[in-house]
Length: 263
Image 1: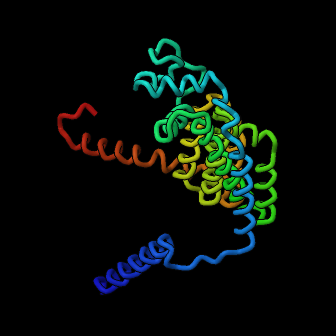
Image 2: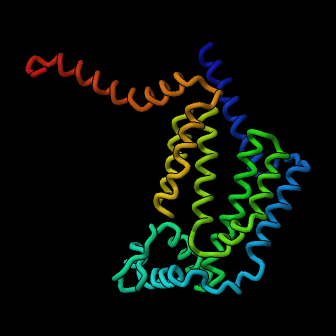
């Protein structure tokens, strides 16, 4: 009987994995709605605003463009985000944003548009993430309005056409907000750690600017009504302390059985 139940569970698991694989591969048709078409239009418009005559922007901020040029010359300058190829002076920002620009310049060649392209893509990604965040809480209409407002905001367009990496920072923080929302809905410590890791990546782009969202993220996780407050705190505490406590108890029992133990 147990063998039969095990076979049934195995078959169900394989069927579920096969269904997910087919969906990811596109074999299962995805139902497109008017909101998908509207979102595609907004994303296309956002990309147009960022890419239109991008070459006329030159190298953007010449200070960071020079740093990217130096970082392409040798690995030492790349690792330390050095302003000069000799590694004498580093720039005033952490290296992650410049690493991304250097990666694009290494593949596409060092041009003004190649070091600005990551910011344009980050801006389009931010528009999509904002839609997903607002739609999850308030529906597709509100999500589309939020995405459109961000796409046409003059400051967003200006940031997308500059190499100061603010667009990349916004993308990381919106992704952290998404992960925090999932953590609040499920009471999941894994999603919470993912959110904090994304904030850490934001710190490596623009330092303490990434921490401006931390109070809001903490409040969302602690006060979201999906899971009671005490249960969420207990869940996070127990999942982080239970493995260590269990291992300590096992060691204590093994030590106490030894006749020569000082414990």
